[in-house]
Length: 381
Ligand code: SAH
Image (cartoon, rainbow, N blue to C red; front, top):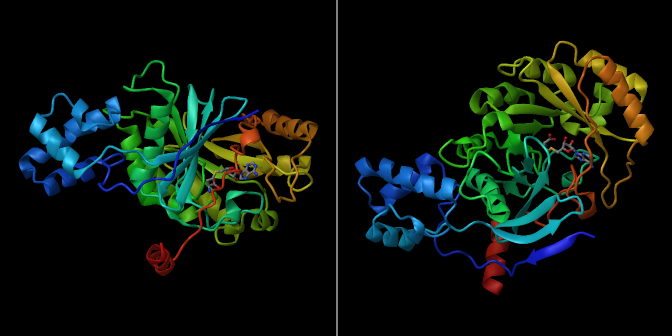
């Protein structure tokens, strides 16, 4: 049975802004706003950076190399509060799912998956809801609420490091070693924030999870793909799921905008692809829809010339879906065709299915509320 560990009370609206998740530039700007002389702001920001992202302190009083008066002043202007964990669930397989409240009515999920990557991977969300409507994806049934800010993305890592008790950052026995942008939302529709968040997460003086251990997954926003590589140096994953435009148009409606030929042109332009840096193709196994051996062979053809590995994802069901997962024997036969063609094609073990934490099962109850309606609700209270 999954265990429900923590249900926190509704969030109080924090009176002061939090510095958690801020980029170096933002920290510096905050110091200047607070009255630190511009010439000193850089040094102060560096000190804060180390305390926030290397030591993970949640209280300015712990910053022992910062003058007492300055600590007091910082505490008057800012906090080091994390977004609140509204609910945490732990699967029988150790997967942890966090429902995180970013603002009143704005909630996203993040999932920590042990024994993936070097030690464990955190699946982060880049948007609340999604605009893409992929027909097999639970998140696709939730309308976009909004993009997350870079601070809100980086804060997901902070929260999980808190929960795993992994401060200060040590390079040796960390459990959280990899980041995958495979949570809610389409990261390439929020590239500025994703880029800035990766900057915070990868920084060697702080959270220190390298760009090579960070993977960004996209449903195929072709024009942004080379840019993603140039800006972030992250690994690329493509949610492919079909080998021809007809079927892909149905499963991933974004394909109508960026069909396969255009998508593959963009993938080939991803910087520094080679044996050491391969593109991951995700392929969800849908019974009787995309799982024939002919399709496995078509997939081999389609990937010709692209340094690739293929992740076969058994379809994870969710309430109300009409799709079913392919039979295990079918998935294995499909994988065999790919293996024989020389592709590493691991079948992704479903993780956290019992708590709806597996691929494509994430969804929060948040809905987009117009500012006018929010104002009315506030007045009514
Ligand atoms: N929008 C981005 C990031 C989400 S990643 C993208 O599409 O790549 C989430 C991954 O889980 C994607 O590969 C998605 O296609 C896959 N997925 C979605 N629903 C799923 C389901 N029900 N079962 C298995 N995988 C699913």
